[in-house]
Image (cartoon, rainbow, N blue to C red):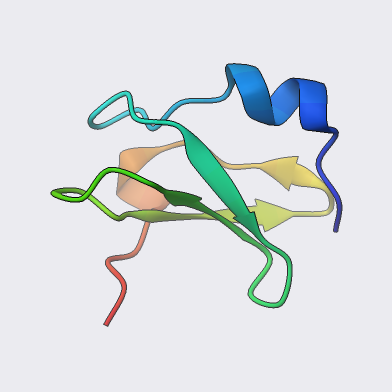
Amino acid sequence: MSIEPALLEIFACPACHAPLREDEEASELVCTGSACGLAYPVRDGIPVLLVDEARRPA
């Protein structure tokens, strides 16, 4: 999985609107907000930016 850098610049966490960073090993986009930290799955190269689909990191 590799999200284009231009897309990563415009993606934001739907819950808190903080920028997202890519976690290639887990195939997720992770919120960089200190209070949020939700991890959104990337399925077949498509980010699923739905709060209901996100997981809280351990």
